Length: 296
Picture 1 (cartoon, rainbow, N blue to C red):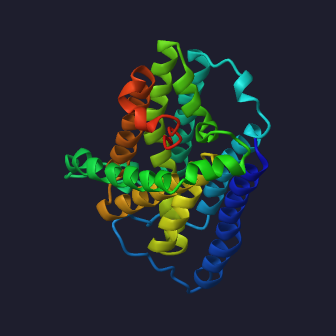
Picture 2: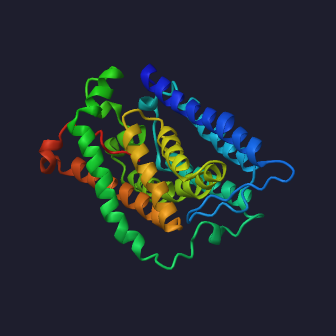
């Protein structure tokens, strides 16, 4: 793990933790907790009723989980790791575990289906809206690539090419020769990640931060934290942009189905393009050596 990535990602996680635990929560407690004080309910389509100061501990739990994963990855030699389909499937177990944690934290206070807007009557709009939205995200990433951001980050980290600065999961999918392993990794990226990350980040953390602050701050905070927990410097701007869009989509629709659909569509398109570039490199000659724009 290169020093610059370690400090930027670690610093971003620390900034999020300081902002939440030492600014947002204390300010909320000082202004709205106490005898005769009635905390206001922020406006918008994402409900916050039922969330309390107690939920700061819930957010802290997820901070701890992802921070431990981050520190565990520091110094890990992924190049020497032999990844198998069975080992990769443990990620699905973890994704199910964090979904279960959210359910346990919330189920005794709110109706989860109603709270996350899972009965959205306009559910059919989710796949329709996902297409133009992921085109916007890819356009943003293409702009970064045109500006040479990936190459600049690679140089900062001491790499010779931008591809070396990619996320580990992207490298594994590109270099993998085992069809079964590819299928498991694709399921993790296209099904497990959209469900688990949307339930945790948009379904729980977003409304908690919104409860303690307001909509704009919670959207920006959510995007920043979402980007940081992926632990990759080259992917940070794209994942921040994607995270902001996902939180905004949730707020505007009031249903978690929309960010889930966007997230799943984005990851699926990335997996398909990555596989095509691996199988038919001649189709993408102009993209040779510039695959660092794939993120999950």
